[in-house]
Image (cartoon, rainbow, N blue to C red; front, side, top):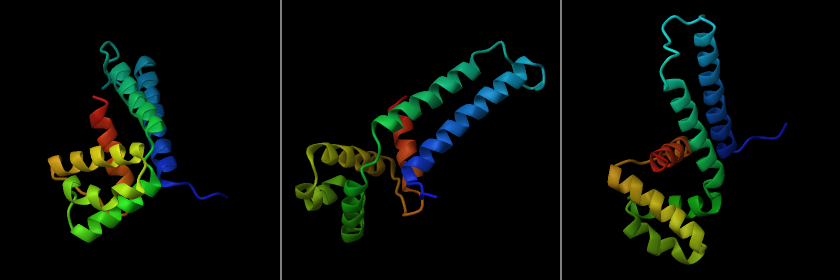
Length: 133
């Protein structure tokens, strides 16, 4: 069995969330969940929002090479400030990688957020979700 990448796991989790919303909606329509209000648009809105995140995530996957360089910059400088990190790694990045990582680190720095090796995908998904609003 092939080992899934972190991006593939995140995408699978998002698709699972969308399925759960659809199941919850179906249960409400069938009267199996009395707490749910089928008359409002919450189900459709939630489903559309999750699909938008899935689409955005599939369109802009986290570049593993660029991330490796960026993490090296974080370890070197001890900060997520793109003004410190980007000059250190920019020559090893393509233009697309540069802007992808620079926007992500700007968002991290502006919001006082950070990531570790275990939750980078989760933080990336949150970043994409906020960008898609």
